[in-house]
Image (cartoon, rainbow, N blue to C red; front, top):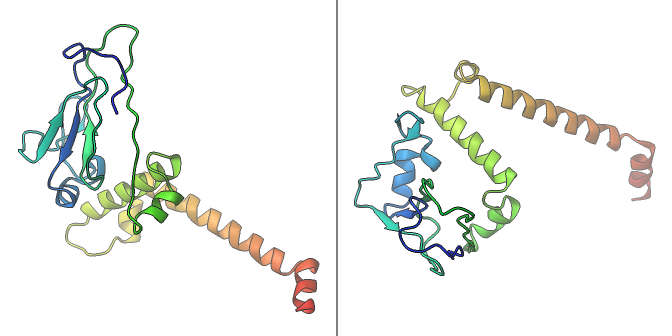
Length: 181
């Protein structure tokens, strides 16, 4: 729902776009363009915005949009906006029974969701660098410093968690619990 009282033509950019190719678009370009070639001075992904598969909906005060959330979608960058106003959008995400539990664990755009997306994007970029192989090797991971650091941190946290679980299992309290059963 578009909530800002902006007159038609007073804002440049801020349009909603959805790609009707759905998951095929994600396969080709990746989530948020992670697999797309970068173009322009800002290094923005080239998402083939001239394709007829993109539906474009300009911002309009009190407009509501309903669309399939599986469609790749985005809002264009705002280039001009009347002084004192911000573009405000109220969104509701509705999920199927298959997707709902995942969305509950990591709601869209939450830090957990964003870090998971970043991990998948990094893994995809590492896989892209190994076009002749099916699997990612340790050597491939070491070529990607961000992924290498991330995996080291995850491995350390898992090791600490396992050590804490082992220590609590051997504590006198835990041994008493086992005896009582």
